[in-house]
Length: 376
Image (cartoon, rainbow, N blue to C red; front, side, top):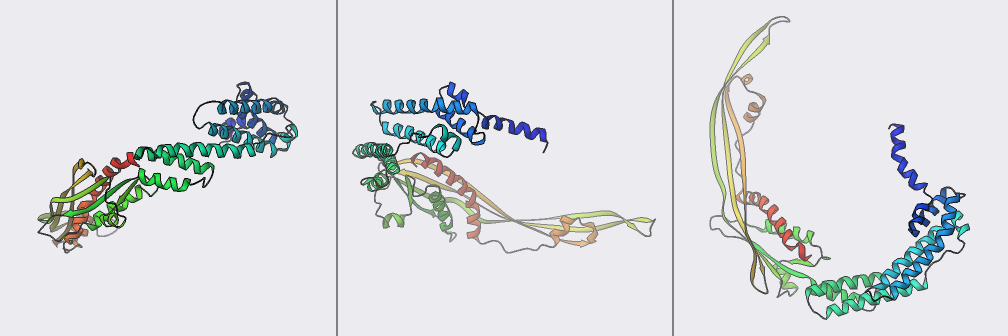
């Protein structure tokens, strides 16, 4: 790497690392000023500018922090103790930074640190969130339960296991979660014996991977719904394959007369032109399969049809092979490769059915994800 380029690349970083914090202090950005000053003292313990910033700015930072805490606690704003915690943690961070820097510790011998006050603040913040969650739970709606869950979650972050917050979280999660029963994809046909189980399993696996147990949408098969006694789900997803055909065979054969001229050496200086001829017959077997999936999303409580869509899919299986008579040299590489192939048995109808459902799967899973994403 070019040395001049490397210097230009590192120059902004050097400026930042060499900052004494003076400009930040002039702007009233006390925490940034102290942080920059202490970082400079780590590498340059005798730096006079950083020493002055720390001496002058640290008392200002502490006074400003206490003023912000007092303002927060005397206000009527909700969750004021969280603002208090934030300020205390920032002060404690400065204290840790100073105590870990010998040059800074000589200047600020007893940096301010909140301990018992912080524990009290956590207690108060947990209580605020907990009471807010209980209040929302009384509304007994999914929307309120979802908000209540967030309050209980934050409560538990402040104080793990606060009162019965774990049980309240579980209750809120249960009320807020949308339960969806995904019915098996039916196949209506008298002509073939086909199973859509593979397709259904793939769709069901996709949904459960996208919407994990921590989300607020849970998907169940009919068997699972019966096991967990989900008699009143929020949504039902129904799928049905129809208007499809599997294994339609089309065969084609075409002949080509080939001619190819080649320079053949007789000796080191003499060449003759030879013409090779052959008759090539190319066979093409095609099996075309296709159909449509109709899927519906139904609001179980109102029986309203929320989504009713048709998704088409198709798949063409192709096997091509050839035979020839005449000179092999008349064939190019591709033509010769075809002559090495043979007619092969047609794929089973079940395999063809699975193949034509693959593009349907891609569109279906995307549409289901988009529909349920607002509920997660």
